[in-house]
Image 1 (tube, helix red, strand yellow):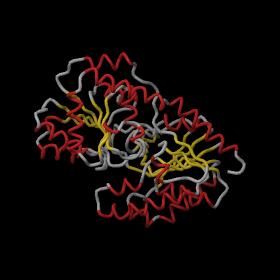
Image 2 (cartoon, helix red, strand yellow):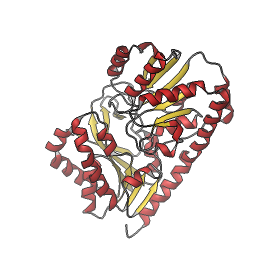
Image 3 (cartoon, one colour):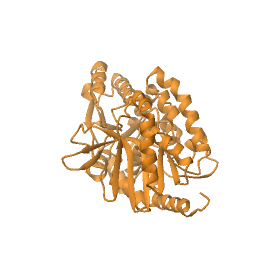
Image 4 (cartoon, one colour):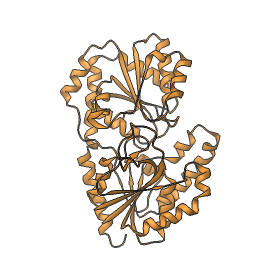
Length: 392
């Protein structure tokens, strides 16, 4: 049985080795495709074509996975100019598949769903984010105008969809309710956790520097980098000059370097760029932190916070998306409120070792609910139910 995965994500093709790469973020890898290949025999991935710009891009190619990349859909103008041509391609693709996995919000996903409604293809919608927040905090006046339009569009799509997977348990469900078959399953891929002993040992150490981490692509300006830098400046002004902020992400980070120089805090930030997933990169990075912060202005359910919690790390975050399902209110701040973030960091710095251990162990325990084995059992059962349901 063949399934087709559709999303606006960028992928790059390297003709020298015949492989496809994740164009940003590094989450669209063999590990993601294996979730679906546990149910389906073959998977076709439909996304947007991107130029191969970095040797550090993560490989997305995998056995039993084919890629169909749509050209000329970069930006609103190209999307509108090529809308009919793209829809024609999508019709051809949909005609050759047995099942559709449509990840939203995305333009390709929305158009695929419109086509899907006129056929008898079985499908599931994956709601992974909130377009209202994404456009509202995009940073442009046009984004603020588009935000309510995209909110209404997604709400209408989800309301009458036959089957929906949300990455949250409550947040996205409340804003974009589905009348029919739905379930909440995070799209985090958590294979293992730290032990309680490792958490205790880390926070019992005496470190000269207080190390903070933030993971988020540099392509966009709503992942909280500006707020993190402003919070760091305030901390330094208040005498906490031993704080180091480590930034991990893909894309051009020059604007962050410029801002750090302007704020006079360049010596207190380290831009690490992109890291490999799992034990080859992200996990050792998280293990090196005293605190993980995530002041993003829009999220579905942030995977990286769950990953940080699984390493027993103290975490602070904005209250967007489903983050309140992960962290208690005292560890959350309003999106954009860098002053409160700075105050929260100061509070964590003043915590005793015992207090940090207690928070770390509580976060470690919460992450149990997001282990891949647990989530995959729920996902597989839900997909098989759709496939076997004759009325769907």
